[in-house]
Image 1 (cartoon, helix red, strand yellow):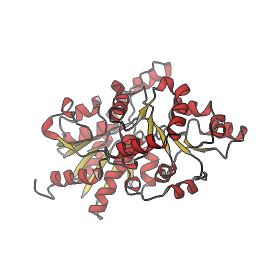
Image 2 (image 1 turned 180 degrees about the vertical axis):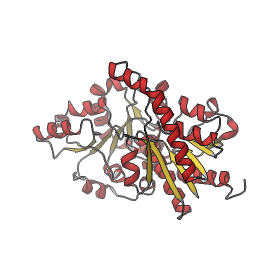
Image 3 (image 1 turned 90 degrees about the vertical axis):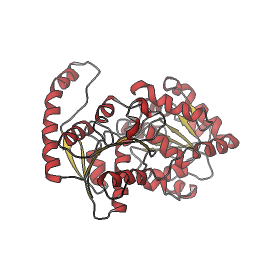
Image 4 (image 1 turned 30 degrees about the vertical axis):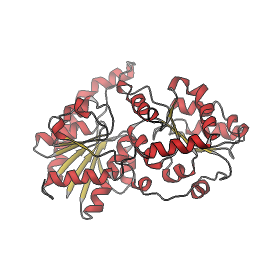
Length: 372
């Protein structure tokens, strides 16, 4: 089995890609897997750290905020696209994969488009309930499209769709970590309530500011917080907590690598409403407050969040209200054990386990390892 997996940009694309790669390797230990990503993006660090080879393309996205610097970047974009397609053609010719898999992100467009033109079989994995323009375009030549939401025939040919759910990190899906183990790992007191705040792998400014501007809230209300800031606000957060002498109550992390232990430690979780985050949270089965990002296509994170809210599986706070309503909502939930238990059960019912294995089943069909 030889597979190219392309995409990235954020954890929402990288973690599913790695989950698929790991599932392939689990089934075919001798499989050769090559990643193709975008230079300067998160995948160029995370993929090698997971033990896989990656090639970087000079591809970038269209800059929608029209500053002088961004206008110059947009003028360079056609060259970057052409250069990336030339590089991909060489990569594919040398590697000669059985299948090329796209998970979304800048690099997936030139990789899958060139692969299809060269006659290679392609598969798309669409994480969201709203399919972006790139994947809608790539779908025309894809053999199979693996999705995690019903109703995706709005965007893709129904004959190509397979409902698999979203692949998540195996360490989370298979975790048996206890709350005591999680609390010990993050040096929080297991006898006090623990709030986990995650704004995605790159951080979320509004959620970070919600915590930053209310640091005394945690000591005042006997609540501890494990706070993933992302890289942009990490140094500022560490300084603010140190200056306020609140290190006992506020545990600051730029990126949490052992997220299964953070989930285990948490009594309540505050999160964005990205598709992969929701897939992980459903498997974890903890009460969650979703704060959808407003900076996404078609406001699809709000749609994701409301799908859970309507089933009693989550609470939602609007992004522009989280500064005033986010922490009071979390405190009320932490103090209501019955609601926490009810929400935890409800979100657990939405979990779709073994999604990565289901995607490998589809890969097997496409490359002829099993009969359809």
